[in-house]
Amino acid sequence: MKSICVFCGSSDSVHADYKTAAYQLGKLLAESGISVVYGGGKTGLMGKVADGAVDAGGEVIGVIIPSMNTPSLAHTGLARMDVTPHMHSRKARMHELSDGYIALPGGFGTWDELFETVTWAQTGAHEKPVGLLNVRGYYNPLLAAMDHAVAEGFIFKEHRDAICCEVEPRQLLDAMKKYDHPHDAVKRWMRED
Image (tube, rainbow, N blue to C red; front, side, top):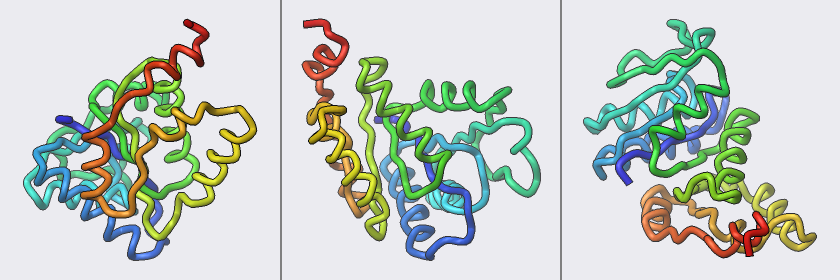
């Protein structure tokens, strides 16, 4: 993986552990020679991921829409800032630039980006690893909901199991490097066999 897209929250009003984990993830990616692609913000976890990578000498590419490309929201210390016309093109650009995806804690925007990425993997649109950094057990309720969906027959177990989930950045990156796309499950889901 040469680049990883990081989805995460932009709120500053969150526990310090989330911010610390975001900074550590950005730093680890940079130290591992992996470019960071993200939403271009300077606030919340978004800003901390970028700061961690920049401080470690890494390449950070922001992708932002015009209404968010303001002095109060946009990070100014990046290698590059791509400005796209709307949210759909923003997500498409982030996907295009990335070899894998990590979701840190976040809200609706983070979940939207995460689930679109997972859905694209489920339908075979990409074969890139998707990971959750489960800081403070943030994703435990979501993981339980996914398990419930598997039990009720809405999600194939292979698709659920394909989402890497760890509590430490290094463990998550290691798990993602071992990712094996569930090709047979994609074929079953798309009714190709």
